[in-house]
Image (cartoon, rainbow, N blue to C red; front, side, top):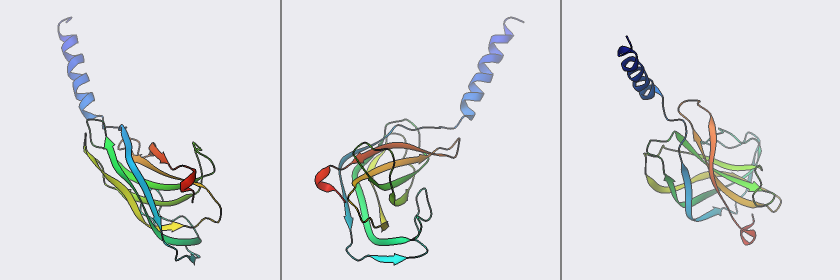
Length: 160
């Protein structure tokens, strides 16, 4: 009996480890980042459609725009969940919250994959100065929740 017990434990451990999906990826934003906003601004009482973490950011003034970083890198050895590229307006550098101006969906990255990262679409208009911030969120395969992964915050000369 003592000989069979370790064999069963090893087999159970191996099967259990194969059944657990990846829950977190080591994702990093790198390289120069930029944003472009149109000067044509219009009010939409129903908000504009978004395809990232949120489907609509609510009523307000919007203009067309895009945000980009040179690379998003998956340092882990497994595929990520779906990603969201978000453009935020922060009150100060290193703030952890602020208005979301744009959110766009991005396909998962394979393990070790590097590619350009960004989103374009309708961007909410702000009537005050803020620090622009591009960040990446991952929808994990196990918990089905969005988790923050990385961000790039622009400096004072790039204020919105």
